[in-house]
Image 1: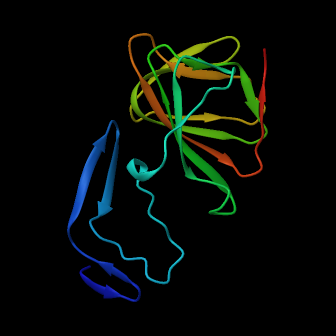
Image 2: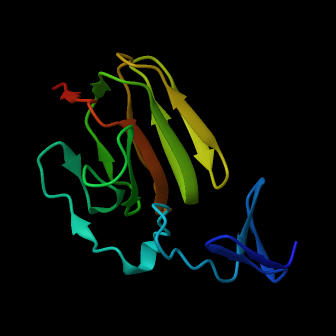
Length: 155
């Protein structure tokens, strides 16, 4: 529907991108004058290195939706170098991971699962798990947790 609808200009030009099994479509321009909606471009978000001892190998994070934005969720892109991983942990809320690139491993205390681009992983609150990149492949995912969620690391 071309034209101007209130504060948002909707144009028929859009670009589809295939992300594994998921197709993402975005409008080429979306002015946000006076609105509360935000467009976050990951390439413009600062990359932070994860140097905590709960990670092995090189791991970086881009905080997409932080505590200063919405009232319900935190979201970030986590990138794992080949073979890197985190220690076993739990969260006090459910966690959703959306694989955006590479091949990874999602594991519980008893099972390991291979995942790839387009896969969505639901981890219930309190479930012990770890995740990281497969050997020979880097791995990236978007992680979504509730604002009040706490991560409890296990040895």
